[in-house]
Image (cartoon, rainbow, N blue to C red):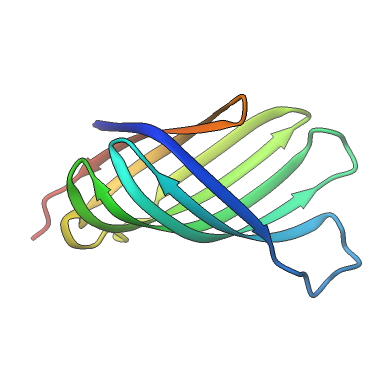
Length: 132
């Protein structure tokens, strides 16, 4: 398992909902800029759900990452699934199988995100299998 780490910036932009009366559901675009071992940009979409209980929510997202990972160029897709249970987060971000392209073909792994004082960073544990 190889690790890639570094900071990133993210911009989330709300998308108007066709169900405006349901304020608990939301949709957003994702634009990220990764730095460090992963020099890349990503674009994606997120679906969110809030609740009437403070500190409880959930989201799912898909984003395509395009750039270089430890000097290897290509793209891959990350799938997010997260819940916040009364302030306790649980987050899973995994590479969609067989989504790696070019020099990232065969990529598999999981990413964790840290947010300290509004500054985001990632830790990406991955393998890069040789393909036939």
